[in-house]
Image (cartoon, rainbow, N blue to C red; front, top):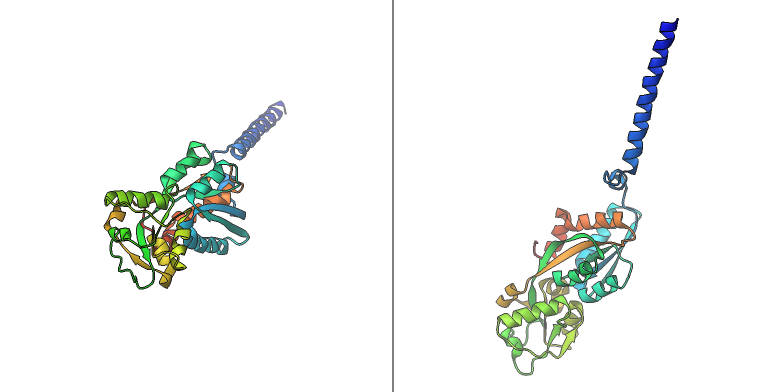
Length: 268
């Protein structure tokens, strides 16, 4: 009887120890942020706010609709504009989840203030092209042609990536050009030509393609000296980081790259 009681007591002790160990392991697993178990299995939900360079507008609008369709209940809102203006808004505290810039220089405005979570990743590149009036009535065939007397040319302001790139291209060709106006983003520069308020503008290939028959495009060799890398980053104070990461994953996926390539963007 004593031997049996002793054996029963020993079994209970072992069972108790095993249960305690399981409870401890379970507690560690649920509280360990490094496992990412909860975040990886969570479905994207809610609104994700994306600040993106103006040249990304058509492509990102397409990807935003695709994302919402793939993840019912989500909404992607965009703020498009000059990368420098967007970067200043982010560092000033504007609520956003993702920043996609048209140059590493403007992304650095955000990373220098430690407002990005992790290291930005280049997801596409973009090259310049000359946008002319439909049919190219001024017979523009080179960057040098933009210096012709009487020709009304528009450039992006040098504070934004398309303006910085245009300056690099002009310097590469040893050319000096005084535009009729400097615009704060590439879409504004293109619009001047679309409205026939300018004869030509130096913009991105992607913008010429997006404009369809509203403008004609002219390639020029100096553009090879001013190709812009486009980085994307999750922001440190992102209100919806989980869904933001899912949207960024779509942008960088093969499917997302197809949309961007069709728009004229180059692979990173």
